[in-house]
Each structure stands twice: as C-alpha cells, then as structure tokens.
Image 1 (cartoon, rainbow, N blue to C red):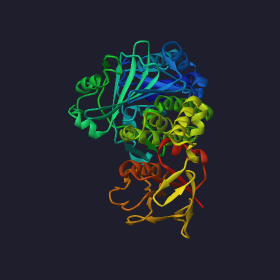
Image 2 (image 1 turned 180 degrees about the vertical axis):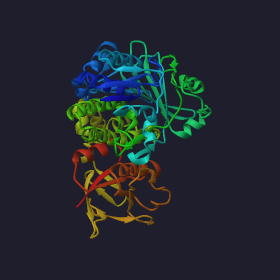
Image 3 (image 1 turned 60 degrees about the horizontal axis):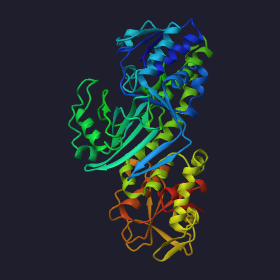
Image 4 (image 1 turned 90 degrees about the vertical axis):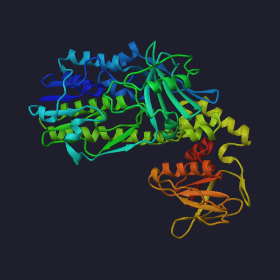
Length: 517
C-alpha cells in the first residue's frame, strides 16, 4: 500500500514511523509545506498520566522528554501577590522544534520518505492508496472533501497569543495580573534549560482597551506582533524578573474547538484525518500533541490489524480513536469556559478560593484530593476558618429563611419543575420576573452563549435558584447571579452527588446545592 501523509507535525511523523516499523511493505511519503527546521510556537507539554499508549507504541517521546525535556510535579497559581501551589500534577515539556527533529530522524530511520518545502493538494495524490490528512487545524485536505465529514467549529471569546521567554518558570505557572486596561493571564512552563513557553490570554474588551488590536492579521505567517510583545513584557516584568519575551509567529487569535462526525472518506479516494485536522481541544488541558500522536497509534494498529480491507481499517480507527478524544473535549469545555471568564473570578474570589475554583474546573473535590491532598486540605481549612464548619454543613440564612446546611432537598411540582426548597421552613420558588418573591427561579439554557441578561429579572428575590440546561450552563448562570446581582444562588440538580455538591460550594460556584425530590 502506498500512503501519502500530508503534514509533518508530530502526528504525521509519528504515524509514518509507526506504520513503517509495523510493516515495511507500506510505502510512506510525508509531504510538509514548511522546511524541516521550521516550526511555529515554542513548547509542547504532556501529563505523566496520559502517555502510556504512546510509550507502548514507541519510546521515542519518552526518550525525547528524558533527554531534552523538563519535568515538574507542582502547578503554581499567582494572584494578588500570593503564590499557591498544587502538587500531584506530574507533567513534562519539550521544545517543539526538538521534538519534531527527533521524530523526523525516527521516521527516516525506518525509511519513510520525508519531503519538505512541498505543498500538495488532494488532486496531486491520485496515485496513492490512502491519504492521511495531518495538516493541522486549517487542513486543506479536509476542506477539499467538503461538508460531508460533518466538521463543526466553535470559536472562543477569549483572545490568546503565544510567546516564549528567557525566564525559567519552575513548572506550570498561571499568572493573573489586573493592569490599567484589564485582566491578563499567563500559562507559563519551562521547555528547556534556557526557555519557557509564555501564552497570554485576555478578554476582547481588555485587548481593545490596551490597543492590541492594531496588528495586521493579513500579514503572512511568520511575522509577529511586536506591539503586544512590548506591552506584555512591561505588564509582566516583575513576574519574569525583567526577562524578554521571544517571538515566533506570535499573534493574537481566538481558540477554535473542532469536532468532526466522520473521520474518514472513501470517495473520491480514501482519506483519513488525524490530529488537529479532525479535532482540537483547548490548550489549557495540554492534549493537542498527545491526541495527534495517539491518533497515529490507533491508525497504525487499525491498518495492520485489517490487512487488505481499507474500509474496515478506517472504520476501526474511528471507532477506537474517537471516544477518548470526545472525553478530552468534554473535559476541555469547562476549562475553556473558565478562561473565557477568569477576569470575573479574579475580582470576585480570594486567592485561595480562586486557585481551588481553577483546579476544580474539570474535576471534583475527591479526585483533586487524591491528586493533591495538601492543596485540597488547605482549601477546606480556609473555608472552616471563615465559616466555622465544613462546606456542606455550613449554616445559611437570608431574610425570612434559613437552613442548617448547604445540600438541600428541592420539592418538584406535578410537572417535575422545582416549586420550593426545604430548609427550616419551605422557601417558595417562583419563575421570574416576580417582584416580592422570596426565591426566584431561572432556567439555564442549553448553550452558554444564551445565558440570560439578569438585569431586572431578580427584582425582589432574596435567593435565585437555577435549574435545567446543561451542567456547564447551570453552573455559569449561578456564577452570573452571584457576581452580577449579589444574590445567593441555589444550583438545582436531578441526582444526589455529595462530592459534586461539595466542589460547587467550596469553589464559590454556588451558595447552595439542591436535589429534586
């Protein structure tokens, strides 16, 4: 079989090496439009817990990280002059260019044909039995196949830009600074003995106030936004101890999450998608390169396991590789939402609770405690110092109503909708707007983009209960209630999950959690 791999990133190169190792009868040619030593961005990061399948397939990544990478256990959150560390997060990073050169050498060692500075279209590849589209998020091969793959994109509202820096962070470090134009945040982590990755995020309003919207995005790839570099060097000068920011195609963008229903096509010729060409997940979960390399493992195994039956092989690949990608994307969605709204959390939460809110954005208190018991114990202790009791056993009072704890029963009417919340007396819940109501009831939308404007909706209420929608939109609406109106929020769930309720209250996402009965 003759295979054309379009794209010489980690996923495409790893696949070329794996399939040639597995069966040297496969003829594999990798076409990369850039030069061999060209790369955009700086470092790639991996979690220790996520690399088993890659290491089992080929130790090349383990060797690269051991010889050239940096490893750490702690995550550090910096906010308002405090530095809070959370252990148990084993991670490693390496310079992206170094990883690519190692993967190129591995592919050459098994006689894969690597052709750089060579741009190809689908029509150019008619002589190949299979085309592997590993050409990134803007894949031209995918676009040439048309809408039949069912590829959809969601664009985040936050702005981000990718730099390096000659300042060496100890490990993964999140820095949050409110400057004269708004709140900016950094994802920083070491990638070598001399360099760290330095990704900055902010909201669009802060970005515009700072005058960072002047860069001409129509310039060809390679040109960097030097105005933003100077601004951010000054803003974060203390955090990087006067260090420099380093550029490499550094320009602002909005992260785009891609989901694709079908990962391959058999007509007009067999094409299969791999890595960012078929899926993306927000970089805050550190899984982009990992997912591409895991795709390469799954595709190689599917081809070798279904000799002579390409249709069965591609179906097996999609069936095997797609579920773990969907799980990562589902985990990344609340993380992305956190970064879209971190300015509000910066202003509303104390540093200890902000750090706990951040670390629990995609996992529960119990899972976080297994990973980082000292960090979690500290958050629980800070709550007890403030309130005199554990989170779910903390008394709560509003005008005319009180409860001895934060996990409550909610009474449902004949139609299943919430009607009252149990406490030391029942608190009626009424759909808003209803001036004079004790408890107002809001229904969460299914899409976070449709969160309601709260002005006037809660007039006269002493508490706002939120139900319906998705888990993410319910939580986001509770946060909006607390931060926009100053009213306490009750998050209503349909099932009893004490761990999830504890996480919600301790993080400040809601004041109370109710379960429909």
